[in-house]
Image (cartoon, rainbow, N blue to C red; front, side, top):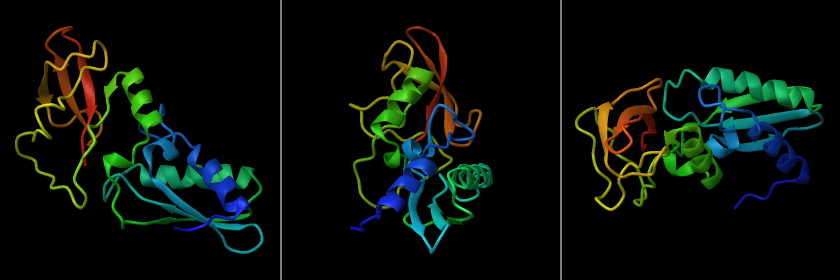
Amino acid sequence: MVTLTPLEAELLEVAGSVPDPELPVLTLRELGVVRAVHVRGQDTAEVELTPTYTGCPAIEAMAVDIERVLHAHGVREVTVRTVLAPAWSTDDISAEGRRKLREFGIAPPRTQHAAGPVTVSLGPTRTLDATDPVRCPHCGSADTELLSRFSSTACKALRRCLDCREPFDHFKEL
């Protein structure tokens, strides 16, 4: 386990407070994409940022926003480095982030219980297990159906609740 200096811990908190550009209800810390901050000399910091998936169009906006908040916090030189390993997983979303997604009307991803890579497929939606259905964020019903594998972003699917009939986004498991 890496021990952070007090300054690194402070800068990690500041960098993690940036809202996600595609889901502004979540911070980058709650999303789990800000991995580390390293102080590299006087007034210089390097931030490790992991995209939700390779090619994520929001990574550039995240980096710019992180640079902006750290500059405003007094860091003169900021480098944001994209780190692909270990890969980001929806399990990296904090409990607070999952709560905020649900309150915002987006079904949070279900927790993966297996360690290691998760197979992603464009085929039919796989069920994690029958006891862990995608629940409606509006009424809590487990009786939901998939309308489209893709929604407003590649990270989300469009579903509908069969009880309250409301459509909703589901943050897909990765």
